[in-house]
Image 1: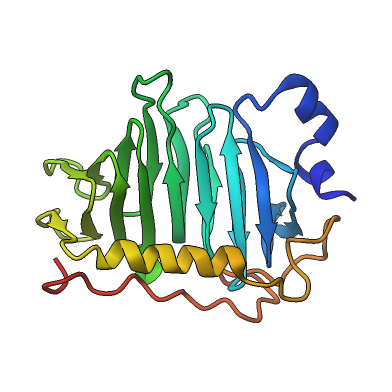
Image 2 (image 1 turned 135 degrees about the vertical axis):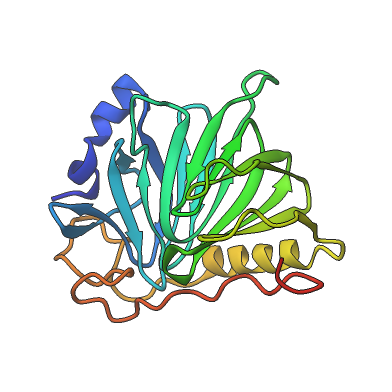
Length: 246
């Protein structure tokens, strides 16, 4: 079965447009869609439909694009659901573990509201580029804004005041603690480190098997603790910011 057929036919994608789906621009290493509790490899050209769960292995990397031109970079050992609530177009992805980098396009210069959810945070954006890392089995969310502005609300303690992060600012959201003070990356250490990690992922040679195959693979072999995973270890979080952890 071709990878496009696993999620949606490529021909149909070309004829009717992207709609609420996302297109896989690039996939390398172990990138899989979970279907009926089993993992199926996906590759460039496939489409990701709302409510689809995506998992990457330790060597996995994917670049997704949605209809408005916004893009999502997915790094190794990541698990997320694309548009968990398709009726609410603001909800872009729910990240359970791992790291993503999101670039939201502005619409004709106007804001383009979207939300990214994690177990501990709700991140609202209007047009920006930012990194989200979910650490410690989902108990900690790290948010860093490369460009633009985001609002971060606590997902477990929703009555706490949200925090606004602007270019160069970052925040860690802990499961059972109110939102801490927003910090600024004065030396741009976090930004340089995240960019280096991004470069490593996009330049990494393919490691045998996984999501670069043109057809669906046998279940397993993906990160996040699925059966048959041979390398599903949680990636290290970004380095501690200058001055210690918030």
